[in-house]
Image: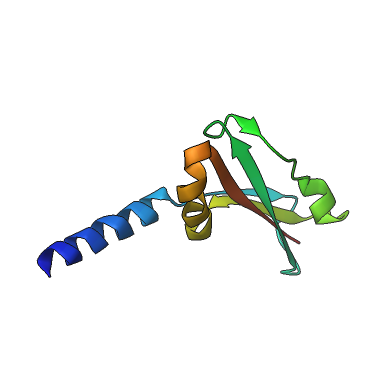
Length: 96
């Protein structure tokens, strides 16, 4: 029982440490709270982008918005089996 608890704590701490967030504020930042989310995929351990996420298009002409890029728990869970083929992902959220 003690070994299982230690294992759960180790995995939980790795997930919490592995989550990273970057926030960029454009203009006065988010005003209305409307959010649009997209996923950015990378190959070769993050060196080669597989798709393009256009944050200006996601903002839809807004002057004040916030861009949040993060690696969250879902990205890590998807990334575990995808890491065998060196693919990873990040979530990009634009809040107007």
